[in-house]
Length: 276
Image (cartoon, rainbow, N blue to C red; front, side, top):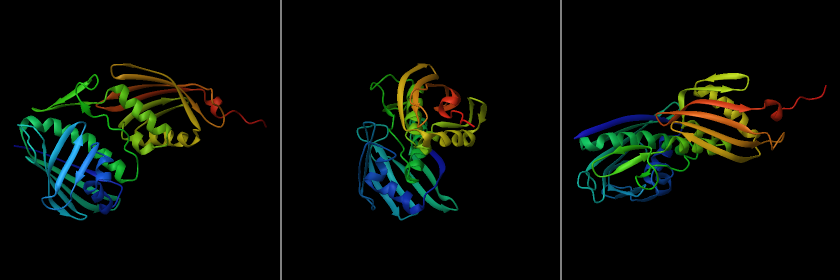
């Protein structure tokens, strides 16, 4: 049997994070479309994730420091209900909570798919628990739409979002003011070429986008195109200064995140010179 371990820092108290592991509204804010939870030893743990019925029990519930559940897929022969164990340990830190996750008891054939799954879902937990909106979840079974990248286990196959879906998710997030959600889709080493300046790294990019987002009063999309891992968007970002000055962005996606951006717009349209 195989084991997957990881950890993540979350800007929220252990008490808050604990609620996102033990309440139905909390759980579905970051993972799954439906949950039926009874957070006590031997209590039901049931979460439907993109049509896959994850079923098990709560094995250990210690507020606000630890949650352990059994985990499997209803109807699966290789990973049946409750066949593996997920252990969440919550430790208070100066900035919030460190969550240490250990998923044990996995067949070797299931390790890769679950590893990528946790890499997808835990950042969503960090956003939701910190008070943000994790946004729509694009994980889905194969066959629901064209699968650009597949993660296969012995019983089921999941797909990651396409480059176009990643960019659209990012675009919806930052233009609605949800900068935290937008930054979960951006690589740490992103390089952006914007009018008059080049930006390197997520912090600089966040400051740039976060500074402009509050000025938006509306948005009109024009068109979007994708060619493999490159995506182009065209839209009218509406502000108090203008509603008809178009903007264009060209993105490159690497490992499921935006790694490059070229942003084109007329700066004078959004900040016309003031008469002396």
